[in-house]
Amino acid sequence: DAGITQSPRYKITETGRQVTLMCHQTWSHSYMFWYRQDLGHGLRLIYYSAAADITDKGEVPDGYVVSRSKTENFPLTLESATRSQTSVYFCASIGPEDRLLREQYFGPGTRLTVT
Amino acid sequence: KNEVEQSPQNLTAQEGEFITINCSYSVGISALHWLQQHPGGGIVSLFMLSSGKKKHGRLIATINIQEKHSSLHITASHPRDSAVYICALPSQGGSEKLVFGKGTKLTVNP
Image 1 (cartoon, each protein chain N blue to C red):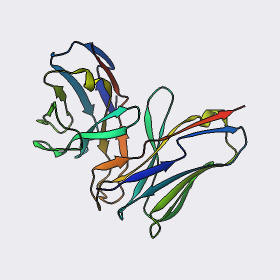
Image 2 (tube, rainbow over the protein chains, first blue to last red):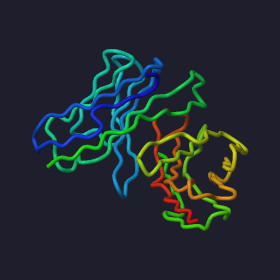
Image 3 (tube, each protein chain N blue to C red):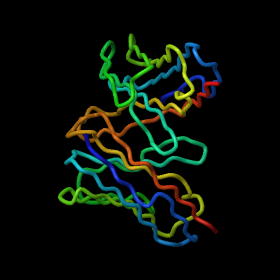
Image 4 (cartoon, rainbow over the protein chains, first blue to last red):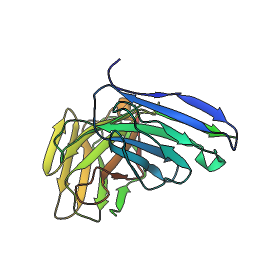
C-alpha cells in the first residue's frame, strides 16, 4: 500500500526493555521525522532525517536512537524504556521537493505503554 | 526557537456556527501548517500557507506575516468537524523542523 505506515500500532513493554518502532514510507521522501504526543505538551520532535544515513536530534532526543540505512525506513529505538516514554509516537515525511511549501504526511501512530 | 500560542484550548459549538481558531508565533516563518487530528488519532494536513488566505470547502485559513498570526475558520460547522486542530510552523526560519501548538479541541453538537 502506498503511503506511510507504522508498526506496531500498539505496544506494551516493561521498564528497561529495548523497543523498536518501525516507520515505512513508499514515496521516497527525503525527510522523515519522529514525534511524540503527550497531553499538555502536544507534538514534539524526537529525531529527524534529511536523507539515508543523515539524522539529527530534535527537541526531546534523550533515550532514543534512530537509524536510516534506506530512504524508505526510519526506525526509532528506545534503548532502555522508561515510564516517561509512555506516549503516542508519530512518524512523518515531507512531500514534494519545493522546500518552502512542503506538506507533512503523518503515519497512523504507535501507542506505547511502558509499565 | 519559535514559540507557538494556540487558542482557545477547548471550543464547543452548536451545529451551523462559525468557528475561529487562532495561532500566534514569535519568529518569522516561511510557511505555517494547519493539521486536523481525528478522535481516532490520525493526523492529516489541512493547509500549508505562506501568505494571504486559502480555502477548502468550509475551511478557510488566513495568515498575517507582519503580525505573526494565523486563523483557521470553519463556516457552517458540523458534528463531523469535531476534532483537534493543530497549528505547526518551522522552529526557526525555513527549517523543516516543526514546532506545534498544543491544539484546540473542537466539539460541534447537533
